[in-house]
Length: 255
Image (cartoon, rainbow, N blue to C red):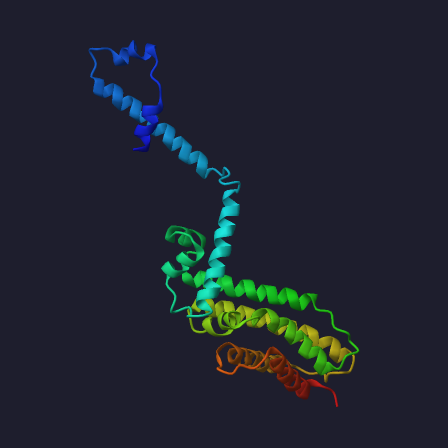
């Protein structure tokens, strides 16, 4: 129908009637067929031009894809953080993000990929917050530890939805999500180890191999965050940080 519309809007010159291809001894159907083919080619060229990267509504294709991704992440946080990953359908995500199912698969490919992208975006933001933290080294060790965990939890547990996504919904989903969790635990373990060494050098912390202890700390972090996400009477971030600081200080502080 679009090709026919283009055809109707194309003026036919007087010379066209004298074109040998349009001569009376030729079938008029051949003329119409030729012109429709020309119109179809024009429409095809227009479509290819649109796919080549031209702006639409003032935005490039990359910008539009970025906006769709942002809306998908926001919809996933709302839905996964309230009704859970397993309780959410692709149709609900598309409705929440105001995108088509086709766009969902183009941007994410699967709900599994969307969950990983969402959790990773939050975790990366938390890592940035930790890297930017500046704590007075004259403060007591337990206070410095609590401040570091506060910077982390203020991102990953800024509300119950975020805490649920980061510490509940990512558990037991698939091998790919478990691999992401393992990489993130390893990254956090490295952060904890790197922050322990200066305290060892200053004599505040007993020298030793803390790798297994850090595994225990990360387990405690996950369990306490799950309480914040799911408990009827959840602890506060301050309470969680205080408990973790006391736990760690009791193990590593020099006498």
